[in-house]
Image (cartoon, rainbow, N blue to C red):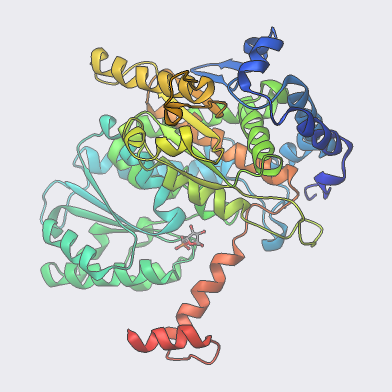
Length: 511
Ligand code: F6P
């Protein structure tokens, strides 16, 4: 059972949206507030530890209603069922898409791996598992790239306040200088290395792992590899050849895509750093969001609403980008993580019928933390010529209780969403001070940055990504575009340049 194959632009709700857009695209958000008495009730969702306000958007009640009709016409409800029940919805790779199962505790294979994750992290944290010379482990290095890096690094950093003491490090890029510099700081006696690669064939990861292996056995015996190296992969043979013992090889099921894999074995580094109890809370929070996504009506469904707003700006206003602005320094890697999750998924131009699309698909996702970003690119948000839809993410309470500083942080968050919307018209002769406002934002307010809520937040975005792909009739779970560059790089390394264009051939000679 595959996802339904419907061109959204041919549907009556889409056609009505085109007409509705013509009527309202010049209106100011302030006008919607004046005209729609129930706007705040209808455009705010209070769910568990989340409060989501999407009222500050260039979207009328009528358009919102039509967008929810679009969900019905594209069979979203049924498609969500197929996503969760293991249907082969990744048709181009003939796979199910079941990363949501990694956080639902209903699957034996998942539970077996989770037990291994808990055991390894508990043993390391309680000093039951020691380094080859009998010393306590102090550092963990995650070697992996893309989905095998961005999620684990983002979450580990976001939850550093919950650290159990082991220091995390990440090697992703193939940059010999970076790896050498990091190795200078590490003690092989007290460091664990996790090689994360679903395929165990990614050149960056394998090269870095081999470089570290060489460094390691200069200091320790080859036999000690079994104490210090763990591999996360669905390739079992290659890690064994590397010297990793069977009990230190954790699998990744076929039905988990790299960019959605942090909930399972790929999240081992997270569990080691924040401890297995916190890791469990993280999974529970994500599962709660999945339940909300499966069971809530479209107009009260946070991931669905965010997806509809994204489609509205992307396809009707023709906004090319959307920004994510967390007001927490610990979430500084969230935009990078979402770039892969979102752009690798929905950056597609062939639809599920095998036809070239004639509408917009994935948006460009970018962002940074507030208030830093206010002092960098916010000028363009306020007075530039582009409309940039934004997600502001803020937390009600700080983790450490410095409520004074937290108040300053949150006052800035409030001020920005307010200013973006209402602007400021000046009667003075200085027209440069005029700020039109009418700039859209969503406010996602969460009780506190903790493992449970972070799990919910990431699952919210994952389910938003699914919804966009489902409605826009594309396949969100392959990444053939990325594969092309990888294979050309291999040819170049082998010295083959027959397929290269003239410009690239000439640049090659410069290197
Ligand atoms: O960059 C493309 C990609 O295939 C990602 O989807 C994936 O997360 C990453 O490479 C790493 O792949 P692997 O885990 O197999 O090393």
